[in-house]
Image (cartoon, rainbow, N blue to C red):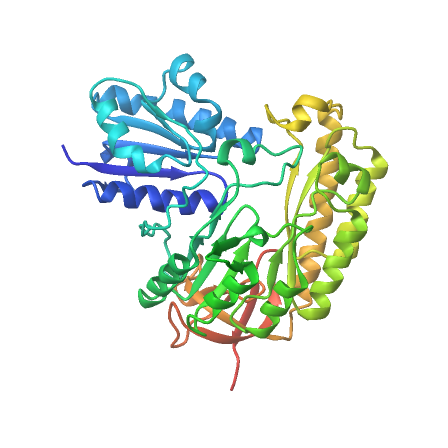
Length: 442
């Protein structure tokens, strides 16, 4: 029987990068990646456990593909990633939906675990590691456009935010050897890629020490930018307590480091931030935004916001809205708080904001951000931006689509341009999601 591997990825960019590592491990063992789940001999669901809704989606997906095992008795189904680590017993025993459960630090063991599952035994490895970074594995690129890709520079997290399950399911921080990062970026450029996003739960914490020398994140970022000026560089995510002036100065010195910083606020209330254990105040966050805009004029800033965290009052909620209004965020990921088992908040704080109040507050946050995002795009009308072409527009083969350095989508007539080109585009108008323009006259 053909050894066909089908991977579904849920959650963050880190999970996308992890799926590419998994694909590499298994293609080295004779598997071929397929996009057709019906031809698969091995189905892996790469999971996210950060929010309750993400877990519900994955439970529903596992139940939806149960019929495939009835059709194909030899089919192996595996759950990998964060949810696998957290819910291994329930997944294996209670629901009987999967054959393999593999945590985010055990992907090298997949071939052995598959052999075990094929012999009729449930296979599990969810041990966390203090060393594993997969630095020596060349990921199998599963992205669709062949222009932009991800490179993981570190794993784990030491920030014990009260609401967050990541430190428990991904372990402590460990950074990847810098030369392996640079080697992967060079390989991407030589393969035709023109944009790379450096990934970490908190990239600002990157530290590599060897023989008394230290490389921190600003130094690594600069080295990556120097691989080739035609390689755009992005990174995600920065923590407000750690983002340094040194990092901002590094960005300002290199045109190919994108003018976009994702800086999760989570709340605009200092009282709530303290309960969240975010280790900064509203005033500190505002100072960081001001510093970003002073050092890097025109830099876009996006954020995360949580509505309805434990004990949140209407005054706290209004503080979040006023922070958003003041900052004028270009984009935001917005959620209502969902308690995650095992976290500090679940152990020590009462989830006491009624769900209907959480929903109402979240809707206000979303409505405000929609207005701010629209304003941000309207402010770009009449300006010229350099756009990296990622492919055709979804609506027409006569138009191309790409992104600005500020991470905004632009659609424009293709003329003689193609995927991977840099194009100067004059912005004529916008929709709620897209900038629309024409190629600028030189």
